Amino acid sequence: MDIAVARDKALDAAEELFYARGIQSVGMDELRGASGLSLKRLYQLFPAKEQLVADYLARRDERWRRRLAEHVARERDPRERIPAVFDWLEEWFAEDGFRGCAWINAYGELGATSALVRERVRAHKEAFRNCLGSLVDGAGLPAALTGPLFLLAEGAMVTAGITGGTRPAAEAREAARALVAAAGPAGGVSRPSPSP
Image (tube, rainbow, N blue to C red):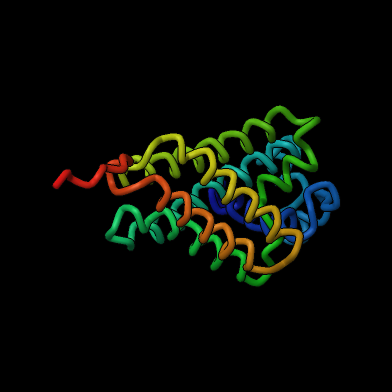
C-alpha cells in the first residue's frame, strides 16, 4: 500500500476516534483496527502517538479553515463577512457528532505535557485570529475589534461543546453585530453630521 494512502487511513481513523472519544482513551491497537493497518505499519508512519495527534490536528486545521473561508467568501458585503463566521460556526455546531473544538479538546488533554500538540493548537488559534483580523481590516473596521470577535467565537465553541446546542453561535453573532455597529460606518470612524 502506498505511503500516502496508508497515512490517510491512519489519520482518518485517528480523527474519527480522537474527536469522538478523546485522545488518551484511544490506544494504538484500536487505531490499528479502525485503520486496517498493521501495528508495525502504524509505528512506521507515526513512531509516537504524539506525532499522530499533531498530524491529525494539522490536517483538520487545513480543512476547517478552508471550509470557513469558502463560507465567508460567499458574502459580498465585507461587513457581513464577520457575522458569516458565526453563521458557519452555527452550522458546524449542528453537525452530527459535534464535540466542541478539536484543538481546545487536545489542549485540555495534552497541552501540559506535549510541546508538539501545544504548538499545533496555538498555530491553529493564531491562524483563526488572523483570519478574523483580515475580515475586520477588509471591512474597514478598527483592528481593536479582532480580539473581542475572537473571544466571542472561542467562547461560542467552548459553550456549544459543553451544551451540545447551536444557541451560543447565534448569541455570539448578535454580539458581533453589535460590536461592528458600534464601530461606526465603513472606515471605522463615526463622522459628525455636516453643519447647516
